[in-house]
Amino acid sequence: MVYNWIKQLHTRLFPPICRLCLAPTGRNGGLCPECQRELPWLRHTCAGCAIPLPPETSAALCPHCQKTPSPLNDCQALFGYLDPVAQWIQQLKFQQDLTAARLLGELLAQRVPANNNNRPVTLLPVPLHRARLRTRGYNQSLEIARPLTRKGYSLKLDICRKHKATAAQSDLSARERRHNVRGAFSATRSLQGEHFLLVDDVLTTGATLNELARTLKNAGAERVEAWVIARTVDREHGGGY
Ligand SMILES: [Zn+2]
Ligand SMILES: [Zn+2]
Image (cartoon, rainbow, N blue to C red; front, side, top):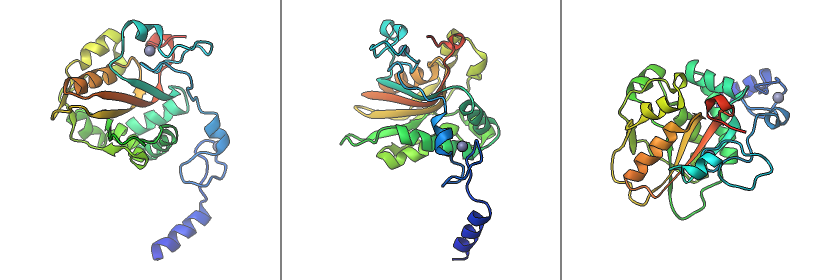
């Protein structure tokens, strides 16, 4: 009761404001409707790698994924990797700003369709190597994925681990990225016939998600989809159009 009273007083003294424009909002750490509308949302993207497709095309896959099929059955990104989203991801990864994870996770949960199938779908935040986990203190992808448990997905953290400590992907070329993550993950049991939804913060070349999807499928997984918060959209990083 005392806690509720303190909470009410706090809300009256410090009403929740938009993270971007400081206008009053209903929720702590949230966004006002205008700022949310103006985020760099992606709409028409490749189902294999989430790169934006030209608006006039009706193809589901980009030319690259048509030629080299992705191990992912579906791949979606919420945003282009542009500010303010890029800034929030940096704050989450390097400044321990977990309020950014809550905001990004809630935005993701608004867009990801609920799992209404009879088949269970397991959420799999891209695992971190234990050394990285120790320095950061948390897995940012897990923090982003949490709100999706309200939409009929289950969260299990013992399915797959990253046993190889890889160099930071951001400093590497596309080919080096593929080589860097090769064999980095291992499934901890047979995944025969199971469905997975991978969750990650940033997609650049897709090397990490593809390697993880291949690992799960080699262990028997039937379907692996991915949702990421942001996708780089410039040519230099493997994007097109
Ligand atoms: Zn605002
Ligand atoms: Zn593609």
